[in-house]
Structures are given as C-alpha cells and as structure tokens.
Amino acid sequence: IMSTLFGGAKEEGPSLTESIFGPSNAASSSASDLFVKSTQSSSPVRHKRPRTRSSSSEGVTEQKVQKGREESRDETLRRRRLQSQGEVVDQLTISLEDYGSSGSSGGYEELYADVRGLMKHHGLVILRGALSEVDVTRIENIADVTRSQVCELLDKRKIPYNSPINNTKTFTFRELAVRCQGRMDVRYEDDCDDDDATTDNEVKKEKLPNLSLIESLAASVLHGAEPPGLVYSGWIFSFPGSADQPWHQDGGPLFETGTDSLPSYALNVFCGLHETQLLELGPTEFIVGSHRMEPDAAMEEVGDAVSAVLGRGDILLYDYRVCHRGTSNFS
Image (cartoon, rainbow, N blue to C red; front, side):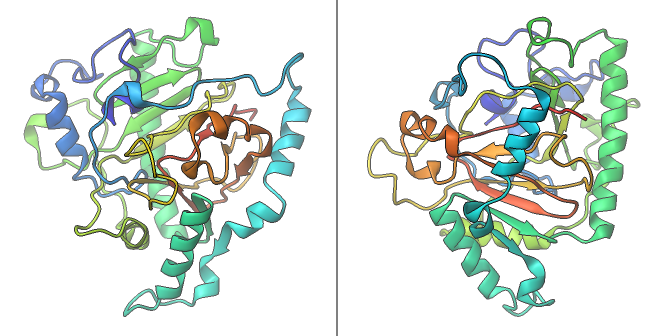
C-alpha cells in the first residue's frame, strides 16, 4: 500500500520516512512503523483490509481513450455530465434517508444488505446523505488547515506540485505524496499522544469525527473472521489545473485464477465535501464491474465509464480492484 499510494519504486525525491517538517524522531521510523501507525487512524477515508504487496502488482497502465485531438473543456464537461447520469449510475446510487433514521439495533440491516449486493455486482456504491453537516464541516475545517500548512511548506522549499506535468516530479514525504500534476495525497495521522512523532511546526492534529456508519458498512462488505482494519486515511487535494490520472487499480486480484466470484478483500471510501461545481472539480471515473475482469479486458470498457459525482455529505465505497482514475480540475 505504501509503495503504490505514495509513488512507484522508481520515483525521485525524499523517501517516505522523511518528514516535510524536517528532521525529527519520527523521520527515523521505518516504513513498517509508519504502516502500523496508519492503522490506528480514526478517519475511514480509505478503508482497506491490510495486505502486503509490491508496487509491481499494480495492474493497469495508462492508455489513450480517444485518438486524435484532445477534448475541449466543454466537451469534457459534457461527457462527465452524461457519465454521471443514466441507468447504471441510478442502479449503484442509494440514499440513506430511504432506510430510516436509526442505525442502532440492526436498524440498517437492509442498507448493509443492499450495499453488499451492489458492491458484489458493480464494485462501487454511492450513498447520498451519509454524513451529517456537522461532521462534514468538521472534516472540511481540518482539511483546510492541512492544505494551507502543507502548501506553505512546499512553496517555502520550492517543491512544485501543480506545474505542467513534465516539470512535476513524483515526490513522497512521510505526510504526503504527489504522483501527477496538481493531485496530492496527504495522510491523516491520529497520533496526538505520540510525542516522538510531533514537532512544533507539524500539521495541527485535530480529531476527525467518529464515522461509525462507514465503519459498519466496511465491516459488512469485508465480512470475515476478524473485523477489517483501517490502514490509511487522508485527503485528496486536486488543485485547479490538475491533470487526469492514468487508469489504474488500487490492487489486483489475490489469486491468479478464479477471482471473478470472490468478494471484496479491501475497499476505499471517499467522502464528498463540496456542493457546487461538482463536474468542474473532477469527479473520479470508474469502469463498473471491473473488479471481476482482467485488467486488459477492463480497459476495453473505458468508453462505458461512469463519473461518480459526490455532493456534500455523500460517500462512495468501491472495491480495491475496480479500475478508476481521478480527473482534471477545471474550477
């Protein structure tokens, strides 16, 4: 997970164990130590069953979907709008308000069952209205502080993170990684009590809300002998002018054959924080059902991709094996 989320094996720049805030006791930690710390985070922005794999197992490489001239901005937005509508998107979209108001004493058992079914068939689910405004505002406030402090430090060290793609190098720090133009993954670490992992200048450690519904949904989908573990949580910042990601899977199948009928072994959860310009901001595109396909076969379905447009308080759950990409930010 660390080698793929925070860059490939050949990336240039600081190592994952180096802190953007400069030398500290935490900067000497090993990658395995950092991995253990990330499992203790309370924000299920990315909720995965722990698994060890090398970066070479990342299954899908970038391919050109359209040959010839590039799409104009208006053409791209029109395509995103069409991809966010239609029968398939309607099938994989549900609303929390349709399941009553109580999640206690098994009150959401029908919801859990529907999410399991949609995840098995489509590989992703959009759940409207999953987070309260109080929780979204709290997450948003912490995200704003984090983004401001991280960008200030990168600017101070003259490290480009939103330059043209040929001038933007992949780089990784203990707290963040940039893998393509204008797109930044920043780790959230709930280690306020760990004195060895803090410095005077480190990002302010505020607690994220307890998102128990997401934890329950993850446990329902990843049903196994033991409860699933949270191995990473953080922010995805896509700045204005960011580039499209390559199509990729976050993880391949566990076995070489017979995996098309296996349930999810890991999943990601995105939490929507915006309420306007949703198409312009760059929704993530998905190839529905690709968690049950070979990578080459999945890439043949790019023309039927859907755009998962998340409003404020919506969440998206998707199987770790689903082919997807983040898209450019036109805002």
